[in-house]
Amino acid sequence: MKNTLLGGLTPQQFLRDYWQKKPLLIRQAVPGFTGLLNPQQLIDLACTEDAQARLVTQKRGKFDLQHSPFEPSDFKDFGKVDWSVLVQGVNHFLPEATELIKRFNFIPHARLDDLMVSYAPKGGGVGPHFDIYDVFLLQGHGHRRWQISTQADQTLIEGAPLRILKNFKVEQEWVLEPGDMLYLPPQCAHNGIAEDDCMTYSIGFRTPWHQELAEQFLVYLQDRVEIKGTYADPDLKLQKHPSEIGADMLKQVAATIRKVQWDDEDVANFLGCYLSEPKSHIYFDAPEKPLSAAKFALAVQKNGVALDLKAQMQCYGSTVFINGEAYPLNKTDYRVLRELADSRALLASDAHSPAVYALLHEWYLDGYLTPISKRR
Ligand code: SIN
Ligand code: CO
Image (cartoon, rainbow, N blue to C red):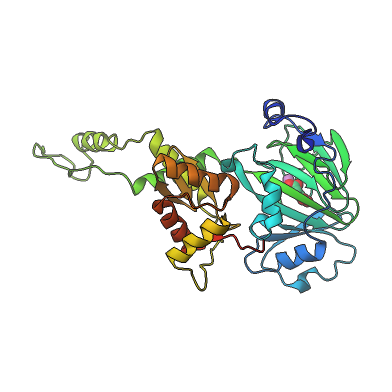
């Protein structure tokens, strides 16, 4: 079957020729797609307590930015001001959004950030900028003019509340219709302007800073490092200046610190915990009247189980990671739970081991997953 999502390219061809390399416009990537929400539903979502949303207004080229929480009255009358509302993590609220993201399963989940949805009436947008993300910009309702540039000049307008490029030089532009999609690699300058009432679905892929990875790895390591013994100086020599750190002390401590070591297994464990850690504003709701372990197992056997929309899983070796916690398993159980991580669900089956049922029940009590209800 022709892969419309990538304009007829196979995922391998896309990864080889475009991913992280150059933009790709795909007309009718998702034929018939007109979006998952209407503008009012997106505004309602922007006003919910746990949504992360931004409101960008623009008057005579001057941008303004507000962050959630929002009230419905924040969206009343903008008069002649161009504006746009952008909501992050829409996949945490809408099952259809998680389904949409599954189309991008040819990119590892470890790289996925979220689905952001924007709405702008004619003229609205967030101005020319570049992101450090890979992004697929899928057009929902309405039309958006996308202008792009591979320019090296990344100078930003000083003092602007958003990162707006000072010297944006358009190299290519297109008007996207519902179902069209534009892939942009990181650092590719772009500007999207609503041609009419316009909604854009941005499937974003994170590219962590090296600095962030290194700092977070050290945080991870501090809980795991184990070096025995205490400082000792039976050969201490009299120092002329008691305030000075002596050469022998420095040598001994340097040798101690060199004992802090790690291997690829530690790095993999860190990555699994770090990448599956939910963002700080995310909370899980435990079931109000939880099923007992036995009833839960019966429900899973009968109907299967689905991950909560906010839950994040990674796998490595024979360890699964869920929402920042590592669970080392035997190979058979690992394969079962990797399937849950891959497809965010397990089909009805009574073939799981007691250990798998126990873990699933623990995660169910944490609000990370639920048995699939028969009506779905
Ligand atoms: C938008 O949807 O208006 C902005 C998306 C982007 O430029 O990253
Ligand atoms: Co952008």
